[in-house]
Image 1 (cartoon, rainbow, N blue to C red):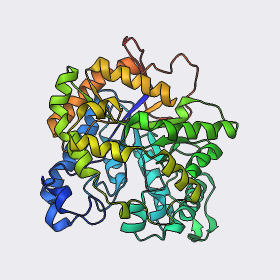
Image 2: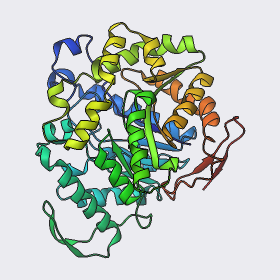
Image 3: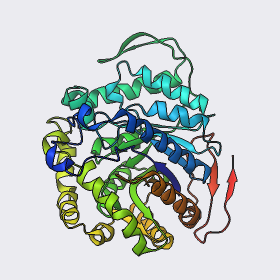
Image 4: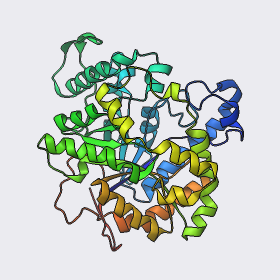
Length: 418
C-alpha cells in the first residue's frame, strides 16, 4: 500500500469564538482581521518542514493541493510548494499535486507548463492531480458559472493531455480555450505524461472519467473510511459496469490519523486539535458548499442519498466525544498497533491501495505534527506497506522517478529501490 503524507496547511490559530462570530471558514473570512502574514510565514515553513520530514522518514509520497480564500487550507498555489519540495526531498518520494483546479485556468496550458516543470525538476516524480475543484473555490471565489464548471474542466483535461503528448506546435480550438499555437516548453520527463490521479467527493462523472482514461480515483473526505464505503462502493460498481478490473491501486482515500504511544494518550494529545478542525476548519454554511448547477443531477442524487456525516459530526463535536469520532472511523487514532489494524481494515473495506494520510489536523502544533509523522513512519508504515504485496497487482499509476519501497505486514525490514 502506498502512503502519501498530505498537507492542507490550515491556519492554526483562529480565535476561540471563530465559529460563533464569523460566517464561514471559506470564501468570506475577513483577511485583514484574521489572517496575519507573519503567522502565515511561519505556517508555510513549518508545513514544508513537515513534508520534508515525511520524505526523510520513508513515506511513499508527499502531497499538496489547491484551495482559495479560506483558513482551512491556504495553499493557493500547490505548484509553488511542489517546486520547493522537488529540490528538498532526497529520498525520492513521489510529489503528489492533488491538484490543480483545472476549471480556473485560462488557458489551461498554464497547468501543462507548470506541471511539466515540476516533473523535470523532480526527476520524474510528479503525480498530476486533476480535480474538478470545490464549488467554494471555483464558483464563489473565482466566479466560474456553476453550470460551466464541468465543461471547462473536461476541455482543460483534453488540452493538457494533448499538450503533453502531441508534437507542437498545434492548434486547439475549444469552447473555452482557443489557441493558434500550443507548443509548451518543456514537456514532462515522464512519458507519455505523469500519472494522472483524479480527486473527487463522489461525483459519478469523475468515476466514469477515471475508467475511460485509466486513471486513479481518490476520494478526498474528512469523514473517514466507514462513511466512505458508499462512495467507494459506487466507484467499484462503476468499474464493474465498465468491464474494468478491481486493481486496488486504481483507488485512494483520505484519512485523518493520530498516532501516540497508547490509545489513551492519543486522546489526551490530539482531542483539542481534532475539535478545532471540525468546529472551525469545517465551518462552512450550506449556501457556500455547492452553488446551484455545480453538480449534475445524477451526482446530486447520489450525494443526498450517501451523506451521513453532518449530524454525526455535529453531535460528536458538541460533546467533545472522542469515542464516537474514533468508533465511526472519522479519525483513526491510538497506538501504532491500533492505527495499523484500523488502516488495514480500511484498505480491505474500500479496496484502496493509496492512503492519503492526513497527519496534521487543525491547530496541531509543529512539534506534535512531527511526532505524529514520525510514529506513523517508524511504527505504522512497516505494518501496512505490504497490504497488497501478495495480490499480484501492478501499480501502473506510480511516477517513474519515485522510490519504490516494499514492506511487510509483519514489519520486517523494508527494501528500497529506484
